[in-house]
Image (spheres, rainbow, N blue to C red):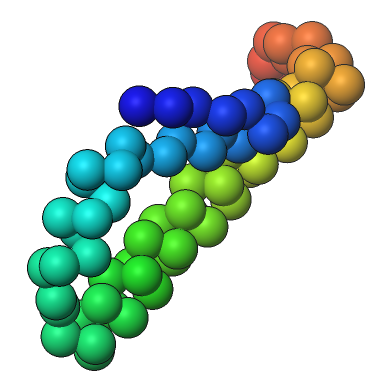
Length: 74
């Protein structure tokens, strides 16, 4: 497999010629193909959003010091 790194976060992997030709001969129902593409992209978006949320919460926690623990003197 040939890999080309576009940026530090995105990696493009190309299939060898033999595999690409065999993949084209396998025909799928157009609706099924579209459904599969939508599912894949939706999964990518969800993963990206989850990573952003984790990154944001980690940064906010590092910027905001935790308040000192209060003891109850009642």
